[in-house]
Image (cartoon, rainbow, N blue to C red):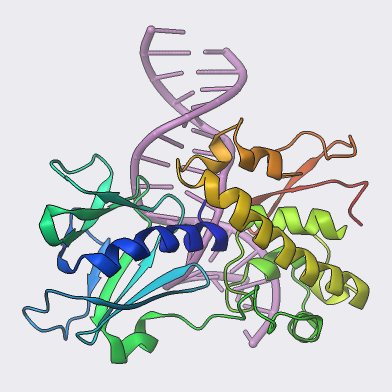
Length: 267
DNA sequence: CAATGATCCTGTCCGC
DNA sequence: TGCGGACAGGATCATT
């Protein structure tokens, strides 16, 4: 499922296309997928890309004409470049129409994904308040100590909270907690400083590795489902029966999500 | 404010 | 072979 590394990979993929071709229109094929700001002018197209960037799991496209678009893939969304889009794909929920009859399809079977289009000056109305970027220096042990202080919720739930750290999802949180040796159900406020330091280091490490390993598995967009793929070999506990040291993996539910961990390696 | 649970949705997988 | 149910999970909203 698209977490920070996958979103970055998708963004890197569409960037050269949007740098080359202007957007002539934005079509919606499913109610609720495309959200247009009510104050938009009648005819805002064509749009030429000024800048494309990522914040957490959100992709933001800023156009020279003063408009911006946010794309969120949620669980099953993907952006697919199509030079000759003859038909509307079965799960195509929206489409960026480009010059020369080309298109970027927004494919999303479970329909949770969203695309917003609005005036750039209203970005704050559309991009929610998000926590620190995990790959930046702002995610450090001092910050994590501060936000975990006094919190009783399981550490895993807190790491998934986008208002604290922006970009982590269920899979990478399971993986990084295994590497850090911390049980996902530990109370956040009771994680000690040396564990916090490990979590900070392992968060960055897992994401950076995934950008390399997961970044390639995203191209056929199978990742977790592709049992033979690189991504499966990258995983150490998520949907696994045994950890790398041969211990049985447990799966408990936290915040309604399956949480895989090794009770022997994680304390 | 903190924490938890329900909700949105459909493809896939498992057991009978 | 077919069917029902469980499951997958990001973000938001409602509830305690």
